[in-house]
Image 1 (cartoon, rainbow, N blue to C red):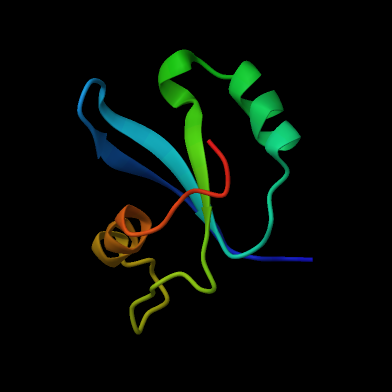
Image 2 (image 1 turned 60 degrees about the vertical axis):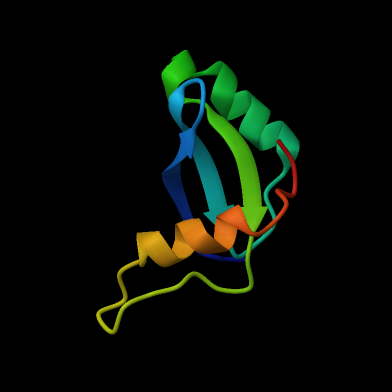
Length: 79
């Protein structure tokens, strides 16, 4: 029941960037694998991070720079 999720591109040494999913509720690895099989390689989600909450502005928009900082300092739930 609910949770917020966002896909962000984070810097990657070899590929330039990679897509990661960040959310506030659990995601099944199998669901992510199924999604990745249905999209082109550059659209695949590389890792999943779970946070207690997503950083948001006063208007409710996700603060991507703060989110990137949080992700850089945390281990993924799975990759």
